[in-house]
Amino acid sequence: MSSFLRKQIALTKNIRYPNKYIKAVYDSYKKWAFDEEHALEYKGKWLSLFSEKTSLDLEIGSGTGKHFARLCLENPTKAFLAIEMKYKPLIQTIRRVRKNKSENARVIRYDARWIKDIFKEDELNSVYIHFPDPWLKKRRSRKHQLIQIDFCQQLYHIQKKNSFLEFKTDSLDYFNQTVKNFKKVSYKLQDYSENLYLKKKPVLKELSQFELIFVTQNIPIKYALFTKN
Image (cartoon, rainbow, N blue to C red):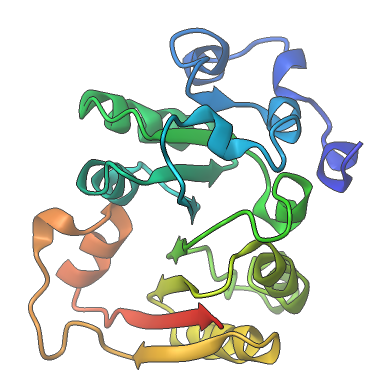
């Protein structure tokens, strides 16, 4: 059993009083959504779910799925996966995808801190991490931050060479820490901005839910693009 599953108090299938989003994992979206146990079965085999697809991209923390659904719609020749821990955004994400009639996506209920449990080395192409919780309110909470050295090392090994990693956040402190951590594990920094839309106006309809909130509040968006060479 994986490290993540050992820490789970209740697996999805064992929840006694599931809400409509939990039920949807096994009902209306059972072809498209994978619980934490089912995901383990596809380690190294995710591309087999997508006919004639040779590229597998991942979004970590898809939120309500606005950005993820657009990626799938605009890149029909690629396959996409999204990881989410909470059931409501998990189902909201795949619901958006299906509303667009996209066939090239699946969603996974898993904790990305143990991402090596569900992907083999060199299995992924490009990765998107947009606006993860920075956990900055309390110093002791920083242990919950996703982007720490161990996670960066895991991600580096499961990405293919010449793939990219795109990161966005509203927190300058978390941004600076993240850039340092990814560079420590050999990612190459290709692009960098502490105010992404300073010189170019964003297309509002293309922004994710969180990004739109920050932009309308005039909070600078921090952006970094890394490659694995």
